[in-house]
Image (cartoon, rainbow, N blue to C red; front, side):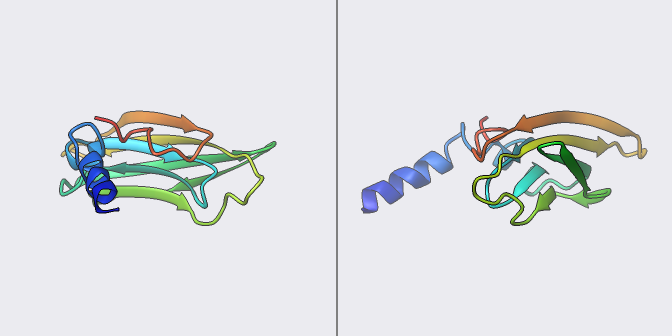
Length: 121
């Protein structure tokens, strides 16, 4: 059992996993307990703004973080994805330069709960 734990730790902290520990990353997840879009870079605060659009059937709602000087900008709808529902999440990730000019960092679009999106180096 200890060997499995050690292998898991090595996997989690390898250079190819958890890009947010080594560089700026964006990701979204859908159909977990939560639906979410997150922008982050550990120990590197930036001006960030994250938008997460959640689609279910014909309905949609949008979460916005507002501008934050932070290392982690997270637009999360807690306990939104109930078992049996199929959601689609589209994230828009924004930054601002030192003059306050907004720029588009990137987008994410997912229908599953996998953490692969934005976590690989």
